[in-house]
Image (cartoon, rainbow over all chains, first blue to last red; front, side):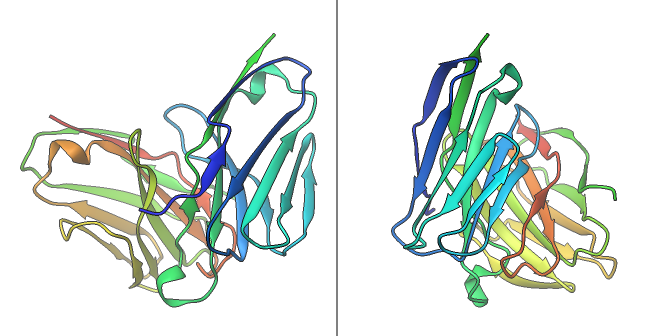
Length: 115
Length: 113
């Protein structure tokens, strides 16, 4: 099935460093979401974006909805060990029909933080 | 407010059997979506239910089915299990399914032997 192009696939960083990851799509979305997933658990929502150009922060996390509606990025500042996990972007097209309730996901970014 | 709950958390079945998974959405949420997560394919959309009606369906065989009850709780069923059905099955709920935020449950880990 269709997936968003998420990069990088993995990152190994030192505690205190900043992190940046992004997602691109060949088609537009009306909603962009960023989730974090720990092994064996469900994704936990980090940030939701509903408007092109929107820049939203949640603590040390900042995400933006691209102007073209085909991309989004997530930044994490001053990383800490508990930031370890898999980060997913997800897009939804709000056009009824075959878009109802359907999120399209990126492949995930595996983040490792060394103390 | 309680989050999305899924039962059971773990299941082991053998090929050919069938399985039913349950999902209780956040109170007030009427849309429930189901996803399959595997290492090879990532997170794939299965189907979405709203007010007891399936409004959208992903590209999965007919062995995968679901339903939603009047209290918005949802179940999904997989018949004639295959080894490739081993996966983490996730459900997510939202108010309308029309672009509002989806909140995920912890998932059900299905292993098919």
